[in-house]
Length: 458
Image (cartoon, rainbow, N blue to C red):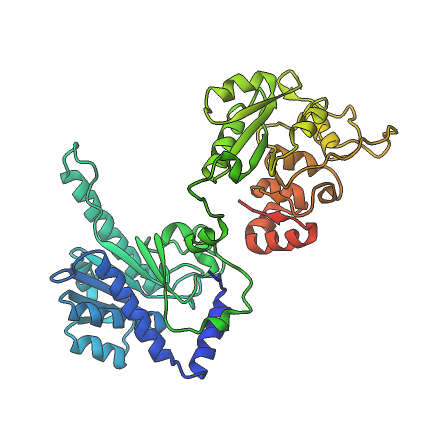
């Protein structure tokens, strides 16, 4: 599924409108989709629904949803941040929804009456066009609703018997596009934002839905079709992995298959300090569908790992005090014959022994006497032959060690998969951490192209 910026979404909506699928038609479909999501979570007849309405298109979506929910038998109150006199307000009022507005509500008595009794709260104040920080009036409105919901939840929890499996969760909170107060490009979040149970966005998810802190407040993300032609997104290169995409990528698993059908994975990981890392990695490889997984680890580590894994096979590696040594390379090279993929790095440490192992494995210079990292150009011994590796995933300490070498990416097999967390990405790129965090997708994409490898920035 395409993952778009705010400007890309605006351009697609404008093109759709110019092609005859009007903004009004898109708004009608958006509001209907929000109402449908609410109804899918339970019958609404007789339920009390509060719709927080902004002055823009997001508020219009909320008003359309209010009309549909009123027609379904709900008691609906639309609370406007600012007065608006348009066809959407008129339609909601004619459907029987109560219309109130913040400027007319002294002491917020009307708002609190509805927020304290609502079964559902629909947040339709601000959508993709919001700019942070939110205005004072929005802060006041959202903080009042948040306070009332929190008070209700605390009261419900206090009345719930200790033996009860879960306290009542309070009202269902549905965000239109996303919680009001999120930046749909950066993922920044206003302090007054109302955390949603479910967010209904339109046509395509936005980058901000995937970035923290906003991502944590979106709840379940539902992408609703509003009639935008998919061809209008043909130039968008970012994709958001979803179950449909992953299902298409996974190979078939015929009933006649056996463990040899689905390939062999080698996990080169672990040290006496980090014996859990290879066990976790091997278990994950099996869960991903690998047919046979072998753990190659220092000899003292294997009994610990074997106690955790009943499926895997094991390849003992020479070690120095529980840390893999360079002498392991010829053994590993022979053991790798017939394997479809190899993971190297989790828990290896970046002590000098592990660094020497990686240098020799990747065909770099021979080990020096340094504590960690690669040797200097002044070493005179000739480098060993490069080991032929299957497709490589390099993680954790594998990344930390290679990052000390200039142009380290040239040592790796083509299109290796690199899985750094932000700290490791800083070491690999020589960027500041703030630079990485400010544009995670952009940084990962740019360096993936520079290095010629797949980058999974965790």
